[in-house]
Length: 212
Image (cartoon, rainbow, N blue to C red):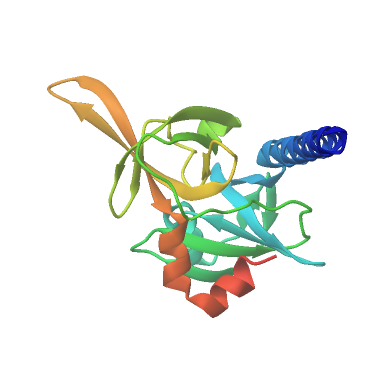
C-alpha cells in the first residue's frame, strides 16, 4: 500500500513539474510572438507590410499590390521605414492584391503564419494609419474569398498583417467597406487569407519566400 502511495506521489510531482515547465515555455513563446509584432511590421510608402522571411543578407516583405502599384509601373524607389530603396518585386498578383518585396539589409525577426481560423475568432490588425503604428482588435465575421473582420483598417493599414489571438499571421489587410443606409452606420474590414497567397505561389515558391 505504501509503495502505491509513493508511486502516486511521485507521479503527481512529475506531472506537476511537467505542467509548470510546459506553461513557462508556452508563456515565453507567447511573449516572443507578441514582441515580434513591433519588430516585423514595416512602413511601406506610408502604408504597411511585414517581414515573412529573413536570410543572412536580405529579407522578404509581404504587402498589398496596390500599395506599390505606382512604384512597379514607373520603376520608382519605395520608402521602407522612411528610407528610399530600389524596388525589387520578386512576386506579385494584382487580382489577389499582394506583392513580395526583397530588401537589403536583412531584418532579424519574421512573422509566424497560420492557415486555420474560424468565424468569431478574436483577431488583431496592425498597420500605419496616418503614419502611426496602431493595433486594433476585433473578430472574424465572415469567411469567403477574403476574411471579413471588425478590427479597424484605415488608409495606411493596407498591406499590414492580420493576427489571430496567439499572434500568428492569418491574413493581410487590404480594404475597408463602410456599411451605410444613407449615412455610415459601421464598417467591415477585409483581409486576403495567407492560405490564398500561399496557394497562388505554389509549394516551391512558398518554401523560398516563407519557410525559415
